[in-house]
Length: 319
Image 1: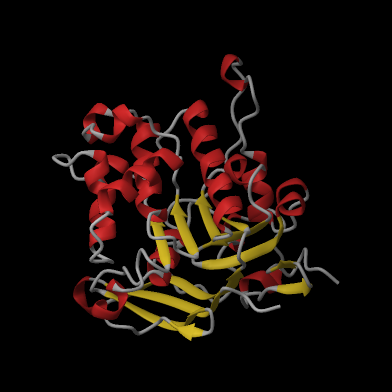
Image 2: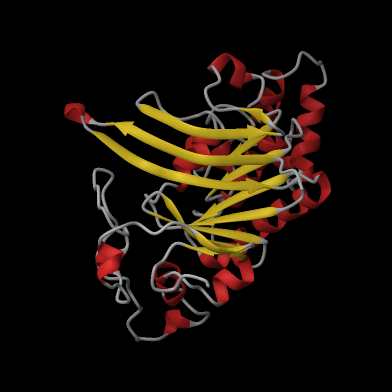
């Protein structure tokens, strides 16, 4: 089976002050298939956003990229910004998480979506097509003429989705698209994304730090820690029967429905994530892991296991 998007040995390194470098993404490999939703789970700072920015060619100037990103067999890594202008939006759509930051405060919703089209085409029907995209994501005609501050958080997020899909991309990257929404808004936005994938047969990478966001929508899930993928497989297996101690710790920290009314202390994960400058020779999670053994501190485990389910752990490796 050929994959629509293939990422192989992706690495992202940032040049920091005093000539130092920080590694945000290390040896990340995965693929996306048309018509499928793939989830990427991990805490803030683990490399999820850097991975997405690398795929879509939006890394900052102080970042360097290694590895391969292939779209339909064509290499994307190393392309110039001029080349990316013809790809970004038309082939790969981008949904950022902060709608107020990423929308122009002095432009109406329909204009913001039409501008994406104008950047890709010389057609004269950009505004009608923008309205069609806004309607497609569930916004009313009244909202078309609204400014960002006049819209709710969920409505603004729908404008970002309309921007991402208006040119008909085959791949959509959604970076924490529900992070600032309440439960109702989150369900609406996720439902809209799932419907768009079903209608357009696009491949969607859904990035989140919340397991619950991925549980009902993603078919496959990758779990990241300290810039690496530490577990991957079918969503039901990963979220209900995790193997890696980090994944298991994330699942234990999920807040159950109705827990807000209790006085019981919530579970926590001891320790803190390693800094970008850290160069541990062993497993990055070893200092925080209750299952660690001597081998864990000596070398970093690689992903291994059967097809469709892999884990990077010496203690819980699949046979």
